Image (cartoon, rainbow, N blue to C red; front, side, top):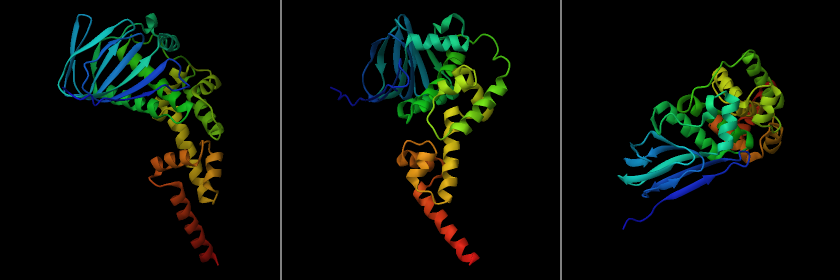
Length: 283
């Protein structure tokens, strides 16, 4: 009898009602699931799994994505060895609202296929899923979803109807300016999209096309850059965190180290030594 080594982590971001992210590791189970919402799964470590949806028979491996609709019953029928996968559950109301904002025909009620093998889409979905699982603030979670849903609608549901409309470039630049003017306080994707009079999904897509990152990622870059300047002048780390919009010193430390591969405290010490050396030189 095989020992069940399954580990399951679940995240339900408070800022995103109707969204659930799950991470399943080393599971030997033959899952049998009835779905009441839209589901997307990405096989992150699978030697092979056979599964069916109704009369439709499929098989997947690492790098494949699978989809289910409300009302579907999916059944795993064979598994080569314990597998790992990540999943996203999207409620009907969230899906319909996103489809309306994105101009998707028929409300995006159906996936194009039950399975997809596309390395680029797989990598982007896993990245967004990781952000939803580990989001440190509401804006980060909202931004990850605002990036993820257009990706799914574009490649996995009906294509969007119509063009983005006039003033797109102006709205994106207005969003950038809003971030620069408000980086020191907490705000979310909803407030940002209202400020520039643009759908959050269109804004997230257009912003990434213009700057190469999501609005939240851009905000983090602005904050850590400002934090670095404050640290150079000797401002204490807790005060730097407060003045740059981070929730606390540990939050600042995580983001600063990710950006510059050094902690704020080490950077501050190095900057302090540099200031002292310059002062001695001037004397």
